Length: 301
Image (cartoon, rainbow, N blue to C red; front, side, top):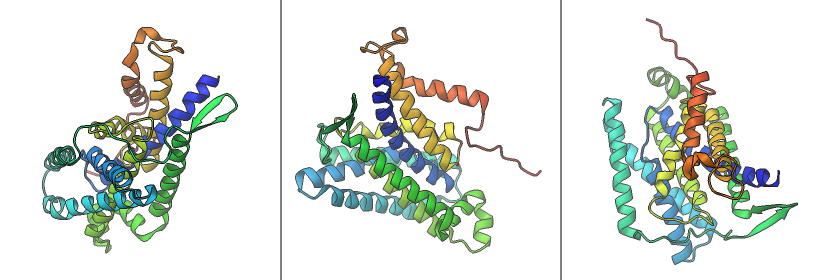
């Protein structure tokens, strides 16, 4: 039981990060774009925070604020200078553009900061505390607190604010939203700013100790991508729940499968935790083809 609870805490912390990343995918998806550059946004934000904290001695929280502002501005500039001109283009074209942005940002990051593994610049280090026989990392605790606070803020924003309601209306029907006076350019700008914010926070905590920061961090965003399918495309609640489920599954399977001291199903192989989330996704989709919170679209012909 102690091992299960220990892994459960770690899984929840990882699930919170996946939930945040999935929310970033979903927010942009509401604007009609699949952003495959989300991982690079995470990478750039994490490197900015690390550089400011480690090399410039800037306090951690201020570094995060600067990183968030920088990546949010990057998202806004990309939407304004590129995507806004592509509004009438096929979806496939826009997807390829985001893939191109992903490559450009990865190359830029490596050229600026190199391939070397570096400290993330977080204040948690390897500090832990005990709850009974369970050892809990402060990094995991603050990851959950920060992520849940952001998620609660976003849900309030989406439900009760003018721009949040405008984003939901735009996601439902772009033309109808524009017809009732909602400024689509403003909505798209806010959408990409939010994407930059959650990407930076997700990248910083994903690289928190004892994890390390290197150029492969951005690929972790793709591990969270199944969360939006599991939860249901376009559902912010589903994205969060899907992220939590994937995090728990990945950590629990990693702890109990393979050649570790707690192995139960060792015959499945050491790396089975990397595909376990897709097995769960497949099982859920067989039962609910539109995801946990997805809805079947009905069109009038």
